[in-house]
Image (cartoon, rainbow, N blue to C red; front, side):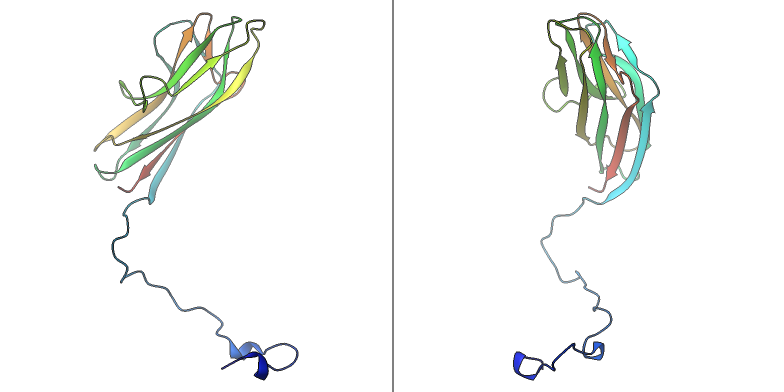
Amino acid sequence: SLNASNLPSGTIPDARFPSTLPAISGANLTNLPGGGKILQVVRGSLNGSFGTGSGSYQATGCSVSITMTDSSNKVLVLAGGTVNNTSADEGGKTTIYRGSTNIATHGNNIAGYWQDGGSNNVEQSQFLSALDTPGSGTHTYEVYILAHGGTMYWGYRNTGVIYVLEVDA
């Protein structure tokens, strides 16, 4: 065995240490939470921007479809883009739909936007996330927006993106 009193001066030759570490097995570990493994990632985008003056949610075209490998798995939805409203002191709200179902965790909105009363050129970035258990089949997820006065834009001045990740249950 090596200890401070019998270490050679200078460097220790490599022969005293294994070149690779042994494999570690988790076969005997119990009571660990399952799941969490990402099975697939699918990306969608909106080339340009989408605007609406409607006070009810409208599909932006920033969407992506995923076909589930197991009906009990979850889908993590991540979307990002810039928002703007063409009227001063107005704004809007943003959410994500799976098909015709709003999957906002609390209420109907995932994010909101309101701009300064003295300007109609304010733009901000939004990041949306939601966790869903859609069941078997192919599912389409899409960013939806509504305007609170004026015209609300998603993907303003850039491309809005949406990712869906299937996560093992």
